[in-house]
Image (tube, rainbow, N blue to C red):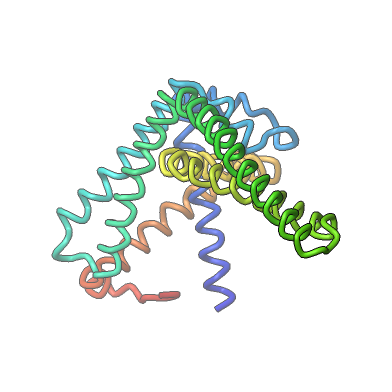
Length: 250
């Protein structure tokens, strides 16, 4: 089990370094990656903030190509692929298409959508805060009036009411922010996730370069190719059996 986990971990690292290399083949993506600086200063937020339209268009094309390839493999090889491989490729195709669309939205409309989110949240928070405070004031008047009629000390009830007002106001504003965030997250979350993947790939590749320079990157590249071929054979059980290749770590 430990050996299989190690092999898959190395394969995941090799995939990250290979995608880093592929991304850098595009001049716009290379410029975007280089602008993030060194490991000590680069961050996910910086990477997202430094993304320009050309780089995002290139990223969009990468994702769209990956989605098209995954869908084509399912369509062309549906009769020979294993059930698990078909499901994985279909999920990958949907995720890549969705992420490509999200990157397109991030590239073209992030400023407008973000500003709209801020404006709507500010407007709705102010409006509903007024409604809630008005309701709280009326509630306070009712409680104080009842306390006065009952002969109790009116101020004894102010503490719980103040706590109720503060917590309720925070809950109302928090709910509005959450509700408005859902629509923005639906559009932008996939884009931020794939940018996070790029950031991790940059981090891992630069770490590999710091440890072993280009030789380690080349070794990981060969491992990625061999690992991908082997996983492809696992998804084609008939061909794997015909070639006499054992199914290890499956």
